[in-house]
Image (cartoon, rainbow, N blue to C red; front, side):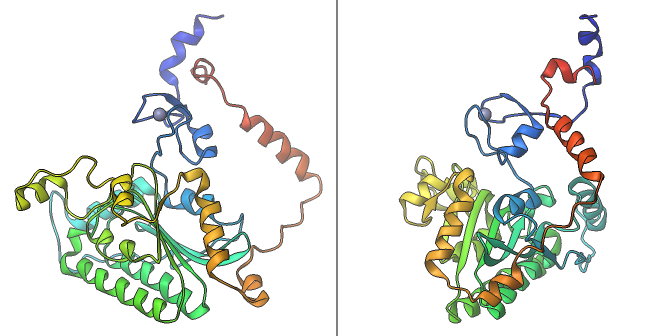
Length: 316
Ligand SMILES: [Zn+2]
């Protein structure tokens, strides 16, 4: 009965389709995940969660998450529209994370790396004490293991709810990077859209190599504040990755599809590892398939790979 398709359309499950904010194309969520959240129509780089980001960079199953239990405390008793603990609870629910940073170790083309990715869906990826601590520990583990550190930033800056305690994270992360640098170790900073405020003014700007995603907003204060302070017109394209590349602040703009290869190649040019180091951080061996279960799972996955058209999904 063809007309039933239209009648049932209002039951379309939420979150199955996403609209590209740049070209308005309707994108199927599953295809989008497979293309690393880059719009197939206009190549716009949509926002990516920290976990998806890490999965897109490290070798499969090599990521070992660290310090996932760290949670912030409301030391200042801060209240804006709602008390800070309430805001945190909302962010936990919305993002499925305990904080705005996901950290751990993994390998890229078999090369060990310590990695942190920031997640914008948790209070704008802002840096409070826990984010600062996780970034610092990632750098410190990289220094002691003599492996490179990779940090993917996506953040509005320091978290005002933690006041001066969040500003102190700028000094703390920068000091850890200075020690990492003194040991002759590599730091690659990746700037995703947006990277601003206290994050850009500390560790994100201190990469030995600084890569940025196309059209990412990168800066410290917003353009209006700068314009009012300096009382001058700002140049065209100010605070975009492309502008900063031209001024020598960013080393290279890398489309997301090339990010993994570019970083792996940089590490292979700049670092060497012993076999023992490679083995220690490598993915665990593949689990043995359970007899009889493989067929079942294969059947399921083939079915779930089908991408229904918008009309079809309306029938769900
Ligand atoms: Zn698009």
